[in-house]
Image (cartoon, rainbow, N blue to C red):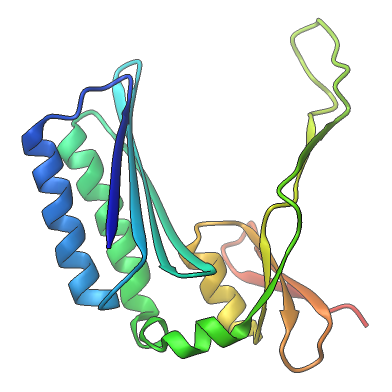
Length: 186
């Protein structure tokens, strides 16, 4: 397992680095068995610290967590706690690595980003926000429940997937009431 720890506007000391590596090693042994790599990004903004935690579980599967706090140790521990809760929910499914390797399409769109609608008025209020098309993601071929699992573990509000049963593109998304919506076009 490769662990990458970076700090933005922050010098990460040896004690914090040792704490992070020990926590990650314990979490990986508890939930995953073996993973490809872990990215930990700690940053300081104004008076708070932010932690972005990203674990590459398999070739096409990432689990993410984010936390903010006034103490860097507590901030990292909050992100680990969020990741721990998410992975406990899907623990049995995550251990079935064959399921993830065969279920994900190997085709990738080119890693491009487009920004549309760059004109904005100078009145301070932007009525038309920037439209940013991010096209560097893999579209998994999974069932609906696995798509919801991917969405939860990647900490996203929406995910597009190819339905394993119908072969059509579908979307699952987090609704404002907290439930999950599923779009299955006919």
